[in-house]
Structure formats: structure tokens, C-alpha cells
Length: 142
Image (cartoon, rainbow, N blue to C red; front, side, top):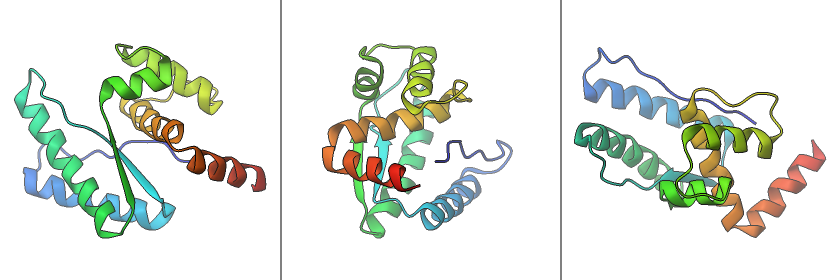
């Protein structure tokens, strides 16, 4: 299991940052060979600049996954929070704690974005019993 975030320099122009993110996505897809890519469904926020940036990066992930023929699952933030914590309005700390508990981690995942990514994966596992059984079988054989 791997858990983390991809960061780029805020000093780079947006096209260069997107190109770097795309390269990292390709590397991760190559290294881990997932069958499913879960992405947070974009919702309009008070900060439109942030929403646009998130939408651009989500588009990269959606396009890369689709180009490889992978299953793509999109979930709203409240749906993810509800599945992982039982509360669709949970705060980031609650999500981090439940990800820690559900994955048996010694500490809460940091940064909070890494916990959010893990929560997306856990949300998808909860929605796909066949995938959940396959993941459990792989864990037993390792």
C-alpha cells in the first residue's frame, strides 16, 4: 500500500504544473497497475480559482484512467465522508482518524489530502463488494 500526495512548484505556470502531474500519474499507474481510479466529484466552492485547478487535475486523472480502459469512479465529498466516518459533514480530522483506523495505521495520514485520497479508495471498496473481496484475498496472500 502507498499513500501520499503529488505536489508541484507554485512558481511554475499552470501548463507546466499539469504536465508534471500528468507524468506522475502515468508513473503511478505504471507502478501500481490499479483496476480502478476513484476521483472526487467536483463541486462549486466559494473559491472558484481552487475549483478550476482541482477540475483541471481531476480531468487529467479521468482521461489517463479512461485511456487505459480502467474503471473510473467518482464520488462527492459528502458521500466519501459519509461512507468513511458515518457523517457526510465530517471534518478533515475525522476523515484522517477513520482512515487511520480502517487501514490499521499507527498515525493519521498526513497531509490531510493523503487521507482524502485513501478515503476515496475506501469509499469505492464499500460500493464494490467484488473489488473488496479481491483486495482482501490479495492481502491474505502477501
